[in-house]
Image (cartoon, rainbow, N blue to C red; front, side, top):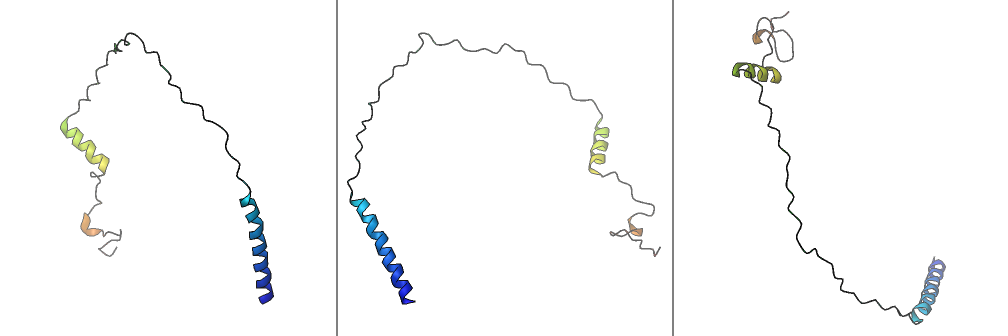
Length: 104
């Protein structure tokens, strides 16, 4: 076990020594010079552009359908299921699970 640890340590030291030589080499210098930023002059128009006008005529909205208030209430009740009819005998003869309470 000690031999494996010793060999691993020697290998790590050898790799570390190889890496030092590359760091000691002089770094390449950047000889590039950035070009100066030039002020670009944008030609602006002499007169401002005319204001855009919307000449389209809006169509009037369609009138709401004419139905009575009672018919509207009935339609709303049907849409929500409030007009469902109970079977003969009412709620008392049928439980929530659908079985008959009268023993039938």
